[in-house]
Length: 312
Image: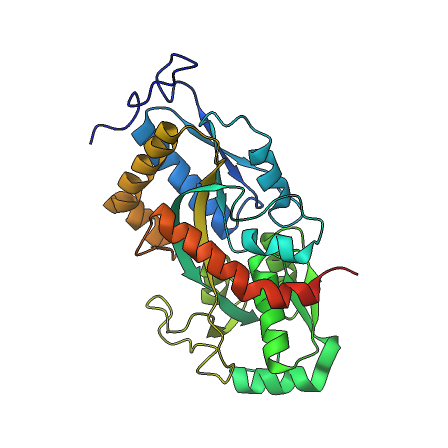
């Protein structure tokens, strides 16, 4: 397909769409998984659309500032956002939250996913999850778990582990995952649940030790690392996922053009290979309907835990 640029002519503007760069809002810090995925998809979709798609990191309050930046942008097809797991839980964390994470947006595609690694600093006296869990129970809140701000994926995963197993470790929030990982390597925190995109090279270099993976099944990329479920953590299945959203008032023809570009890019072997290099796979069903259903399920799944985490 030659691309979708020029397929849409907005009646008001009387111009071909897109005729100028499209913003890709990334409500995360630079260097993490969602940032990497968003930048790859932005570059590839820009090529299909025939105009640059420009990544823009809008960081703060989980994904809230990025989401508000999208909602405050004109609904003209020139702003799109890549979100991740924290997007559906913000409303549960903050009772006066200004938007509904599902109905306030229109999905373009459910794009990608990746399991997490639970890793520890080499000084931690545990080489598998059973001994690590025993150590956590002994040390209690003296153990520091690195994580993002409340609502971010690794923060929720740490809270889920803590709640599921009745543990008392201290979750230390950081503004970005790379900052937390830096402190984990330095030994200022002892453990963290984070994507192989950040953790993998450090594990391979011997700077961190991987104890378990967060998905329901073992990862092809990490076949020797057992799942948390295998290690005695019941009902634990957490993956980082990404979806692309726009304002629902965006003209249907423009949404269709963005969806068509996303479909082409996600089916492209070049895109798949680039994502595979950072340990990411394409969702089996990338449709807008799948994105809506998945986000609704995530809201229902995380609501009870998020409510317990609510400030005050």
